[in-house]
Image (cartoon, rainbow, N blue to C red):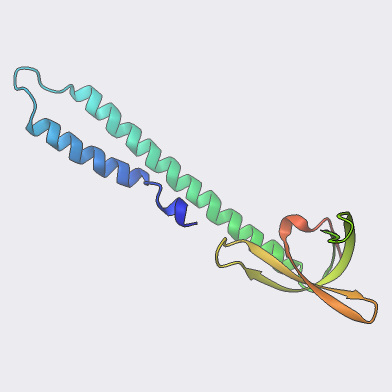
Length: 137
């Protein structure tokens, strides 16, 4: 996530543009002033970019909330998923009960804690929501 935070936001770009614009206005040739229509057009584009950025963040927040709600609805339900067998490399179907729901602090991804009863013991698995292929009561 740290690499994403280095991407400038629309507000950052707009502030940089305003600084550049002020510098250009201070140093412009009085006989050939800057075009007002062009400045207004560029400012309008920055405003649109900022609105799109805000919409994208709103959609992202809504998706995170929906995923958390869905994950919570899976608590105490039986789920089917597949894991890669380390010895054979084949995909093996597993069926277990969702015991917990939590967020990965690094990725902010909603994860499921699933317990699979196997023989005389049980195995704990951590799954993403995408890993679940079937949900049963």
